[in-house]
Image (cartoon, rainbow, N blue to C red):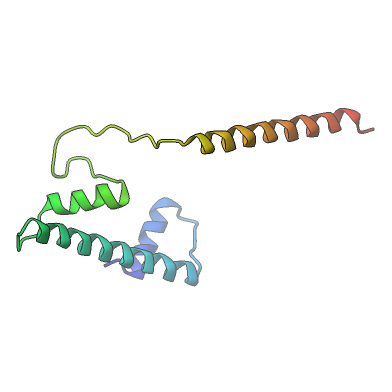
Length: 118
């Protein structure tokens, strides 16, 4: 379980000048607890599905991969995992194309306004 002291140590490792607001600290601790509970519960369900009373690394790894789309190199297997590229739908591609076009239009308009302003 992540404690406030350990969370503060982690923050100091990332940025020694950074301070966390107490509300942010509480939310991060709650997120960590929820994540741990989810991983343990899901992993135990996988072990139970295998008809085993023992929770194994492969149960945790399978849960992390399927539920959270993450894996930990060096844990469980030695195979190199490729990056999973998300599949874009045609609607998503159209929205992104329109977004890029609008962004370019606004950039052009802002540059044009710089040239036209006295």
